[in-house]
Every structure is written in C-alpha cells, then in structure tokens.
Amino acid sequence: MPFIQVTLMEGRTVEQKHELMKRLNDATAEVLGGDPQRIRVALYEVSKDDWAIGGVPISVLRPDA
Image (cartoon, rainbow, N blue to C red; front, top):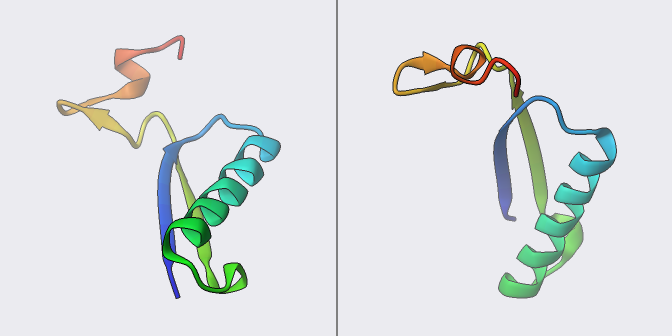
C-alpha cells in the first residue's frame, strides 16, 4: 500500500488540500496500478517560523508571504 507524505507551508485552503490529496491518489493509482482505496496520503503543514532556507525562517525572508 503506497503511503504519500507531503510537507508544505501553511496557508492553503481546505479545498486546495483536498484537491491535492485527490490528485496525488489518482496519479499514484494510474502509475502504480492497484486499488486506489489502498493509497494513503498525509499532509503536514509547517508554519513560516518553522521552515527555513539557509538557516533563516521564511517569516524573516518573506515577511509578506
């Protein structure tokens, strides 16, 4: 059973997250075959203070993002 984990920065709508999960599930089923009901998708949201590039939090690099 495939298990897909996605880490993304917070700020997406519930609808966007649901669509992402659906498309990941559909693409995985298409490429790997098998029962789509056996595919698992987990989204992990991270705050802009908990995500860094080059050691600098996104909240500092992109305060308006």
